[in-house]
Length: 469
Image (cartoon, rainbow, N blue to C red; front, side, top):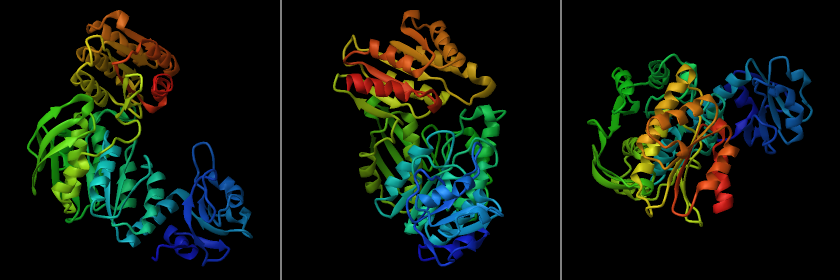
């Protein structure tokens, strides 16, 4: 493969056939969305829950697509006079097959990361470490599902040395599909948590689904695994390849000791590895990010990135947007924007950051704005109550819980655990919470904002930035 997407090669890779147009036509990119499609693209008509992409073939060509991929017997209705038409049995499977063939032809090494939390940060950290020595691409944003991952892997036509991608899931079998597409040389398993518990009967069931990252490995495949997570450790004992462990609390190949939590200033730690030890200053907030950095180091040393380069790069790491960003507003208010997503364990760890950050002055407040955590199933109320108790134990000065019944349960549990009733408020929406937060913040305050994406706690951050930034 020269890096070009030639119609005949694409059709063969997809298991389909060119039914109209020039088989020698080349495509500049691959798209599934007519709204973002660029001229010269190959449009793949994916069938979704609420629409059938094949119905938009004409619109795609009008937008500049020079090829379309459609289900069998749909090609006859395509604008064949203006574009190459490829027919396949299943357009989603065809996209995945194309990505796998591009991946195989690229010659690149692939690092794939999964886990209940920390996937994106670990991806970014590992990619930053590797980029000190190699040409690296990573999947854009969180394009980590059965459609997003293939679109990211098609970028391997750029011929990088290494691709670092994350694999997401909320049902059993999804990681298996993604591993089959990516065929990773290095697999990283960050942890098992409560995320997506609404789709599984237990955390053990989540662990079993995540364990699909172990499948299809050869003796040369490397697994970087969390030694501190019992469910991960139990399932990696039978891995077919090599294993590098990372951790803080237990013996591990890559281990952090002498960890000092400096609140919003990050952490420091001594890290021992099979190739030596190094002291790191980690600007990312919270101990969970220590584990993410350790996982990244496990990947980097496998590719012989020097520890000195790792230490230098660590000192300049920045969080992904809305994943622990520390925003120091001009009004003197500091906001920890962790509004991208949330689960109970991560939310409790985020409140540890509040507790570890010294107050600027005696009158300064630590304020937690906590959005409802979604997809927790029958245990949702109990898990929210646990977070409420953690907020009380963290001695926050004000708590704003956002969302429905589970958020109300969080607020009530915080009061029962000792927070004054006047310091706790439950808001049904993030707009209401933004009003409440804006009314109580003052210079010197530290505000943590965290919640599941569907609750839109990012609106609270944006309001504070607009009014106090």
